[in-house]
Length: 115
Image 1 (cartoon, rainbow, N blue to C red):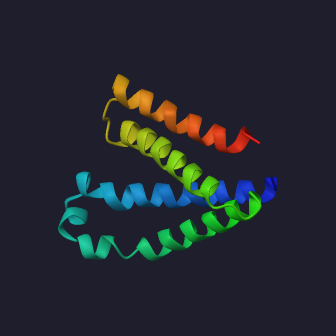
Image 2 (image 1 turned 120 degrees about the vertical axis):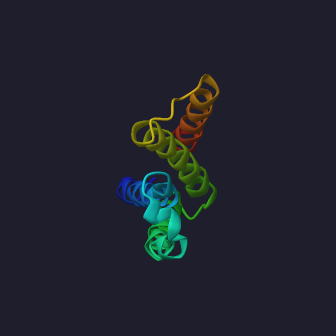
Image 3 (image 1 turned 30 degrees about the vertical axis):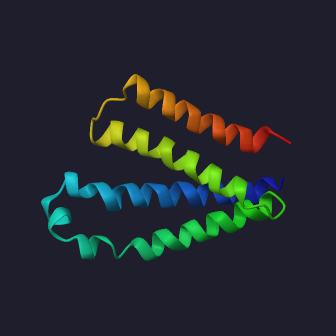
């Protein structure tokens, strides 16, 4: 695995997932966001760009395989969603949610460590 491409891919997924979270959830914080969903969708172009870069970098890091990039992207998304929802929206993590986040982290580790 190419470490540099892996780090670039993970970084792009982190950026895109954080942007997606704010794009989707600002409606619960600001009324303006709730009243302007079309304008809130405009940053989707940037989100898509980072997602494409993340997929490209991770596929290259894993020798052209796309499954690892999809599963890592899923795991990163679930993990960041949980952190941001807990921290910003103050929504508690239930035992069920914590098990699900743990499984997402295990999926990421399987993709990275299983040869």
